Length: 477
Image 1 (spheres, helix red, strand yellow):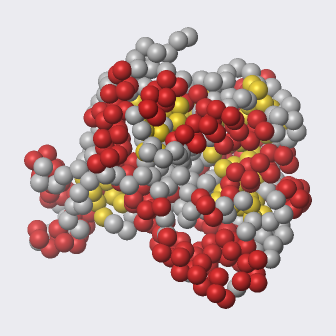
Image 2 (cartoon, one colour):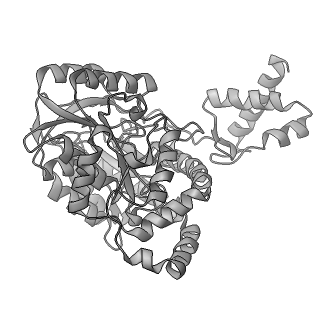
Image 3 (cartoon, one colour):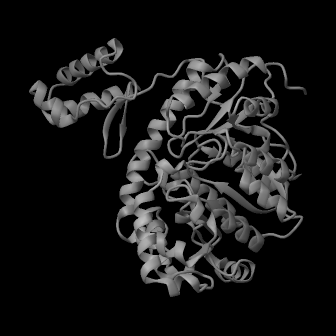
């Protein structure tokens, strides 16, 4: 293969993209197919596609091939690192956040607010077969509660998932929970008490803020980069200044900004906290949903002292209604198991059995590969539509996994006002101040891209763009 040949091929494909022969979102000819058509080697086509990928003209999708990227207008750059408040803050978002989510779910509203995948992305047929068979043959096990720490078969499958994330734990170290939310609650209750300060990302997952509020704790927001996650420098300064009892971070494909801490940063984070004896509650719920084939390591992978309490669930990948989550709480395992046993007794056996069987059958890996490709396409479609529809100065994150987008609104738009007017237009979004203990990020909204792309969604994004213009100047200092 000569360098000239693969560059010539890349230039030719680029011209066809520019001419509209290959349109945004369209799959390019397979490597093998194009090699046969042009009489060149597979390596030449592979090199040409990789060159086009480096030029951001195409993108690769796991087990699927190369696709033409949706163009992104220069008007929509990426948001800057968030600014965190300088002192621990009492959290007060619970009622407003719950009301906002409920209104997004109302009849007649296109729900782009709640960070839950639409049924079309979930393995409904496989689950239907599994659940039907379980109901026919295992009704006794289904109707009897299984006390904490959970079904052995599921714990064994979770351990395999943890191994993929670089974590080596035994099944007896895993506690099954009612979704990731309960896992976070149990872990926070284990490592902190009312009045204690928890360091969080800024902006932070709204469910975490609600948990901290319900437990009477305070939150200390640490500035967070939309690409690389929480600032370790800012965290180190905060730990010197404040009595931080624990940290709670989403380390991979975070919600809402989609940040992923590099492995080196995760290792530094764990070491920094270990030196001070500070526990880390790690939310890795989006960890499996990277757009490439590499499963990022969790911070838990670098834990040598049992201070990382790892939390995840099947909600974002298999189904939120199943309410199947888990945690590997390290040295706190006995305490978490005790709290689980008297707070909710157990998680529904039928859901545990269904998730365990789906994972053990190999269906989970195949499903995840499909999701990675699907969510990559969805996010690109949303970014492209936002770039076309929103006014100059808008910003939007470029996540490397998951399906949530953090959108900055220009021109002094108050996202709370934007949220209300969007609902009036039949569109649900989440306003940014609900992701902040101190009420910051008032010019941001979170969008859920795990909604099947169709004309109604495209129309809704266009309407949100017009609304961003109409609500300019509504933000009051």
